[in-house]
Length: 330
Image (cartoon, rainbow, N blue to C red; front, side, top):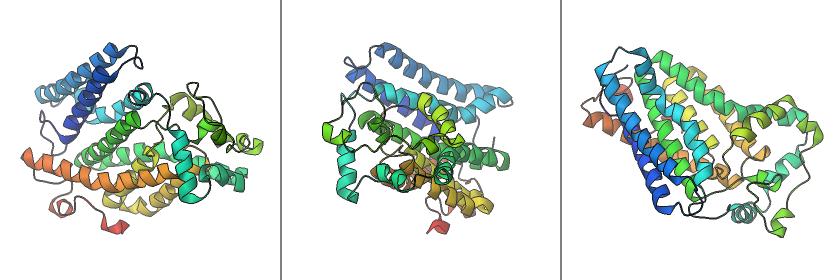
């Protein structure tokens, strides 16, 4: 597939194994009473490292095998869901509760109000809310849509996209384990029996307006969000960080859709606050995360290709000359 050598370790293979090893070591050393089945987590991470190695070597031995080839290049995307779920089980290794009171106070100090509460209060209209809930849902379409488009267009471009996207997800997941922040919805429903200070509880606006709750997209997101959400995965907003990553790759490889995609990303960023999934500081942090890690992910990706003896970039020498930025976004 593409210019990657069959059987060679790539940047995303190493990043995945490093992530598995680091989280496994954290659980082994810090599990205490917060991870009652910690041997299972450690064993699963060790097995995951072995499975990645097996996929790399298995594909080397049978490069024409379609199932192996699919798993070899798609497995980082397939692991994102389990890794995300796991953060909700491990995010009390350092802190015994959630840090939301501190983040709520920080929002108030920085912005003079609570943007995640007043945004919907000021615009309590179904016509507005449905647009924002659609924008929030578009996150999943962005990730899958760009992946599919690049897979069909160029296997090398697809591998580049998967590597940088997975790298940024892994960094976000590590932060979630160390910095558990549940997000504004902690004011509206119990999360692991968390008790918030009275002055923080007093900030909560009334429940979501009935007209907004009746919207089909509001109800869709309730079905999608609540069962699969990992409590404590709010800061930084991976929705914002990864949406920006997908836009970056649109500007780089899928230029005909770049501006509509950019507009959808801006709406998504606003939606994370309007729909009360994130504090505004989470959104700012998500943007800064993308700004810092896209160039770093690119640099590591291309450096790994050079060390592997493959100096050809996904789209040739012209693309290789600008690995860490996208001038069209400036």
